[in-house]
Length: 364
Image 1 (cartoon, rainbow, N blue to C red):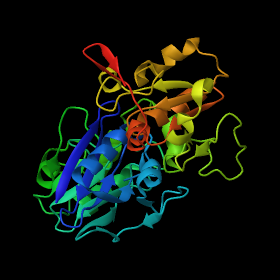
Image 2: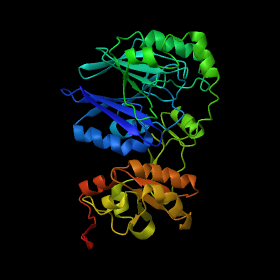
Image 3: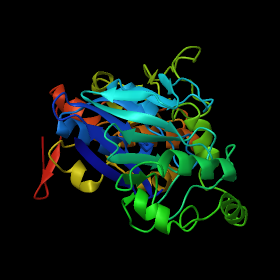
Image 4: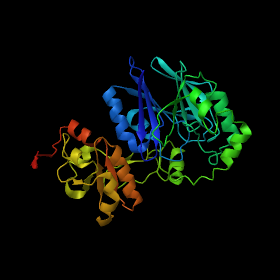
């Protein structure tokens, strides 16, 4: 099996990519929207076709990329049938199987952190992906999203600790640099759920945590109930007023987009902003002539000086960062923004000219 464990440092979130090396079908578990470009690039490099984009639960600490992966790659989104989410392609329950190529994941319901948490176990019981239900030497909180400490205790003991001792457990997060544990380790050493802790002891521990309000919950939770589509943006273009400045299309992840073909003929009527890093701007794909280089993390500060009514088209390598930038500028009050669909990869595929800087010399 092809297996990759990926990490988002901003939220300490693990994303897991599993693929069949023969059929090249793959699944991804708990993808993060900000890492969309990383994940799509990896899929392409490994020659994998993404069949399913899966969330272990409705996250409160980051915006999921399952909807964006559905839009970009045609993957089917998978969530729990208990999650009350809108627009997933497949709702699953305890005992279901998610098949990709010759491989499969067994679905185990493990509520308690939220009412709709799932653990996914490989068919051979060698690996399990526990989301936030069970972390390495810890577990998810139980005070939000219909969480319940007694329910979580029973879920972990009945659905995870019942696996073989040697089963590798891969969590949804880790904050201390740890990557994997086992059933034997957690039953022995987990200070909340292992070591012979009783259900009442666990309930007392969770009740005394006094945890802070989740930092991103007000942004993440409403979007994740819609497979990562931001609130206020439609899942599709139905009922949306057409934008007059450009033939803007809204993708299924709620991102306004224009095509490279349209931008090629737009001339000076729009401000083209490239949100990649400097080495990419000057690198092999080059950049669109006249584009401003403003890396994504510097966008909010740089945009203070821009006129809010000027149309802005955002560009990156393949469309992930530019999608974030287009939505960020709209949130800052810019009336007309769009991501260039497919990024510089699409621009070069079409044979359009791009500039590079080599040894300080600009070339076309």
